[in-house]
Image 1 (cartoon, rainbow, N blue to C red):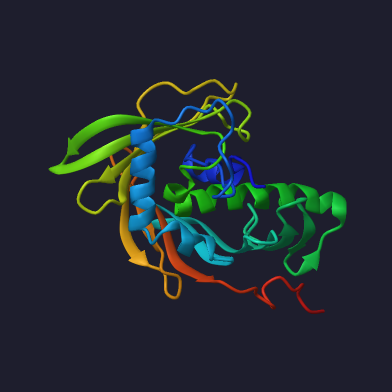
Image 2: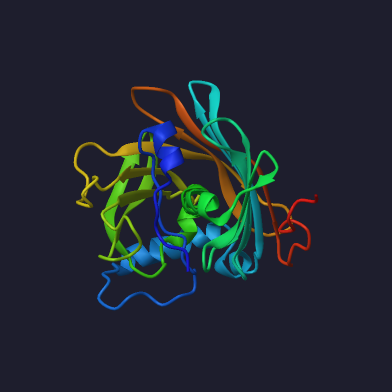
Length: 273
């Protein structure tokens, strides 16, 4: 089971963008978790607009590239291959020194192997990279899949009414997390689901502080754009998330996304000699 984590690599590049849970979609909610029936209705409506839960649950292998664009320059690029059924996972990116990095691991036990510049690292040197890779998957996949995760265990949903922003009408749902849900249960999200498209077209988020307390201040806002079907799957995903407001121009982009319903026989093989 994947849990909430915050990627230190992304935080360094982005000064604290969001990360959150990637949990089994069909698991039952945790006892005592509050879920407003109207908020659940909105969650179900937006899942249907994205292609429906049945189509999403059929996706076994998810391949995607996660890019952080800051003021028109790519400052983070990570390529992921994740088998959601058995936990096998492949990450290709670079180290903080710019060296090619390959990680092959299983998300169930977080064990695996690491290569830097084609050289396999011993277990003690590989351990920090395995932990970073796990955090990267949690962070990056949440930016891609968040609207599918509203009904995961431990997610508290509250309907906060209808709001009109820039001429568009939205149903707003507040997402919080039960204590002990992952590593950042103090994070909060507000999903804005369009009345017209039934898609989440914007979100606000407020991350917990370094002591684990709920964050304070003004939430960050990103527009979720470029909703397109993923070939061969029947689902739709947003490929671009663009920050609004003052400060650096930040965009989270997914220029490559493919899925398959069967296993991948080659992606998780170690590199040759």
